[in-house]
Length: 452
Length: 163
Image (cartoon, rainbow over the protein chains, first blue to last red):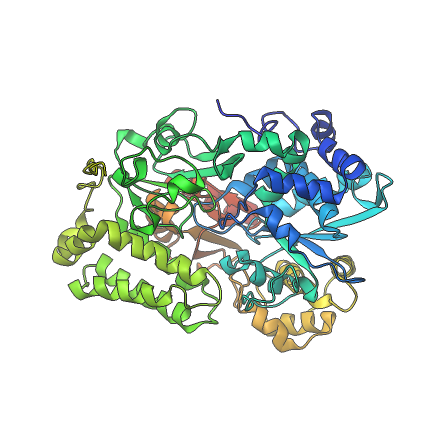
C-alpha cells in the first residue's frame, strides 16, 4: 500500500467536521507555520518539496509563489481554483466534500506565506451543494480562531470566501477565472502581465488548484525533505487520480508517484481491471485534453520500458508516443469503445466551451466537431481525416489561452494512433453505424527497438 | 414586478460585502444564481435589469454575463430540469441510452419541456462526476449511476413532490 498524505484520514467518520479533524492532527501544520516558521521558511519548505501544480500544468508551486509582486500598500490575493471541469477529473470535489478542513488549513498556510488577507475559493457552479459544506467548515474554523483577525496572536488576518461559477470550463484558466470573479465573461487575458503582478482587481494574485493547496498541509507537517522521499524524480509526493470509464472500481485514488500504469489499472488496490472481463483498448491518462494512447503504448513506452504513473514517464516519447499526467483524470476505454465517437464528444465539448475570443479556436473547434460528426455518422470522406489534422495544427499555439491546444491535442492523438479506425469509418459507413471497430491491433505488442 | 424578499436582499448585501469597496460587480454571478432560484428558474430581461439596478451596473453588463454561462437559463424551463451529461467518460459508460430512455419516457426531445410544464430535458458537457457515470444534475444535486429503473424512480419522485 502506498503512503497517503491527503487522504490519510479520509476514512475517519466525521472528518468533515472541525472537532474530528482537529483531534486527528488537523491545524497542527497551520500552527507550526504561523507560530514557529514564518512566511519565508514556509516558502522554502514548499520549494524544497518540489510540489507541482496539481490542476494540470504541473508548474512548480514554490516558484509560482516567489513571483508574487509586493508593492507597498497594495493588497494581495490567493485564489483557490476549484473550477474542476476537465472531463475525467473529479478529485477536487472529493477533497472539498469529505475533507474540507484540509483545504481550509492549506489556504490559511498559503495565504499567510503570500501575505494575502483575503482568499476566494472559485468553485464550478454545478457543484452547487459543496459551497454549503465549505462555508460551514469556514465558520467552524473561524469559531475556533483559525480565521478572522489576529490569528493565533500573530497579527495575521484572513477571510475566506466561496464564489460559485456558472458553467464555463474556460474559467479553470487562471485569468478567465479572475475575470469571472470580477463579474465578467470568462475571457482569458493576454499575458503579461501575469496574475502575480496584476491579477484580481489588478492586484498581485496567486491562483492554485485545490489539491495543490491541500498538499501544502502535509508538506509543512512532515517537511519538504520527507515529501520528496515519496514519488520519483521530479514527480514528488503523492497525486490524486480520478479514475473512470470501463473499469471495475472507478473513484478517487491517492497514489505515490512510483507505481506503474499497469498496476494502477489492473491491481485490486486501484482500478481493479477492466469491467466485464473485457480487454483494454485505450486510455486518456490526464484529462480529456491530453493525448489518448492505445493499450500497447500506454503500458510500455516506445523504448519498451514500463510506463509509470509520473509526470515524466507518462510524457516519455513526447506527443509522438507519449501523453501527460495532466490533471490526473484517468479515462479508460475497453475494446468495445469507438475512438471516433469519443473524439467527437471531446470536440463538441471544446466547441461548447470555447469563449469565442480567438478565431482559430472559436471557428476551428466547431469545424472539427462537424467533420468528426460526419465521419462518425457515415458521411465522411477520406480527405476529412487530413482536413482534421490540418485544422488542429492551425489551432494549436495560435490562441490567447491553452484551450485551443487542449482542443487540438485529443484530435491529433486520435488520428496519430487510430488512423485506421477513422479510415474504416469512411470506407464502411453503414457497418460503422451498426458496430464499432473493436480492439483491432491496438493491444498488440510493439516491436522492441534494437539496442543502440 | 421582480423584487427580492427582505431576506434575499440581506443575502445580496452579504455577498457584496465579500469584495473591496467599489467592486460590487464581482457579486454579479452569485446574485444571478440567487435571482434564477427566486424567479422561476430562469432569467427574464426584467430580472436581469433588476439585478443591474441592485449592483449599480449597466443592464448590458448583466446580459453579457448571463449569455456567457451555461447554467443561466434565458427562457422558461420546466419545474424539474434534467441536465444529462454526454461527454466522453459518460458516453463510454452508456449516457446515450439514458438520454434516449428519458426522451421516450417523457415524450420530449432534448431542449424541450413536457406539455404540463413539469420536465425539461437538456444535455450538458462534463459535470465532474465521471467515476459515477452516467449522471445528471437535478436542481442542486447530482443523480449518479443512472439506469432506466433509476430514471423511473426520479421521475416518480418529482411527480410526487409536485402534487
